[in-house]
Image (cartoon, helix red, strand yellow):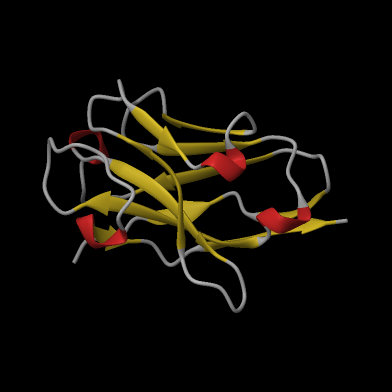
Length: 126
C-alpha cells in the first residue's frame, strides 16, 4: 500500500511558524483529496485541514482557522500545511492522508482516507 511521507515537524516556540510537507513516491497526490490530521497524547485523532483534488476547496477546523493553511505544492504533488502563530495545544503528531479514491471531494472523516503517513511530531514550547 502506498504510504505518504511527512516532513517538517520539530520543536517550535509559542507564536512561531512551521511548515509541514507530504509527498508520496508512488501516488499522484494531485488526483486525490488530501488532509492533515493530528493526535495529541491521550487524545483521539482529529481532523486539521483538507483540500480537494482540484485544490479549489479547502476545509479548516475551527481551532486552527486563521492560523493554519493547507495547499498543494508548486508541482501539485506535495501537500503543505503552513502553521503560523502556533500554540502549545497544537502539540501533536501530524498525519498526512490521501483519500481512498481519486477525484473525490474532501471530508473531515478519517474513514474516507485510505493512505496514511507515519506522522511527524510537532512540539510547541510555551
